[in-house]
Length: 265
Ligand code: R5P
Image (tube, rainbow, N blue to C red; front, side, top):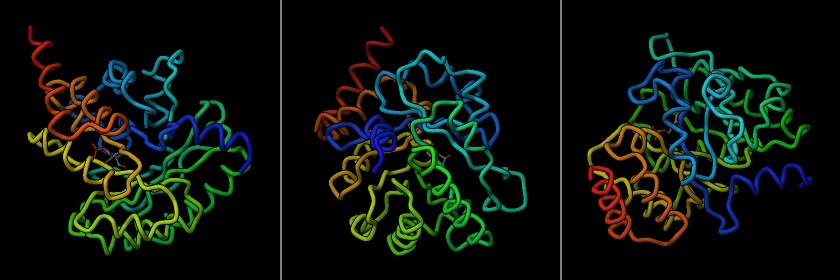
């Protein structure tokens, strides 16, 4: 691996082999999501707890302070929206020149295996990997299911992750599921867990992240359960403790509650 690629990967995967990515990319297809009306404002107080921020270029330029130390994972796919015909109709939407201009440490692209636009999105990943090899930038593939929640099984996600890895993704982001260890076992590159809609079960969020890591994930790319939380900083700190400091979910939940209490005082 060339030095530039290795250096960028080392910025987004810490020396302990783990990673915590803050997902604030939702606007690229969802519009002004609740609590993410200004993605930079939502992200800035949380950056001290995370290893990278996942954001599309519009919000980066409009709202992210260029003086931050936190590496940027640039969302580089799009072309769809929540109100369009088919969420899987996505393509690469950013040039390699802009990836360089924005000093991205990595890029992220969604791949819709088994969808109407499967071929288009797999080939988009493949082409992006080729182009990013030229500039030394690692690619994170996102196994996207659109509205098809029933796809979140080890059988489907294992297949989708393997397809993305074989096209050259450096890291694959997928959902936690039953028998998650099978997904990890079948994927030759590191796997990162995605989040999901906001739940009120904060201990449950810490638990599934802990379980996913026990089963082989190297970390998370999480959004709504952090910045839609009553205490976003408390949740970010608690997740950091699970991912990097070997806290159990209960220990981390205590940390979260202490910070929530302190914020109220
Ligand atoms: C998926 O590609 C989305 O854009 C998010 O990055 C991902 O779903 C993680 O965010 P959340 O934890 O809110 O689901």
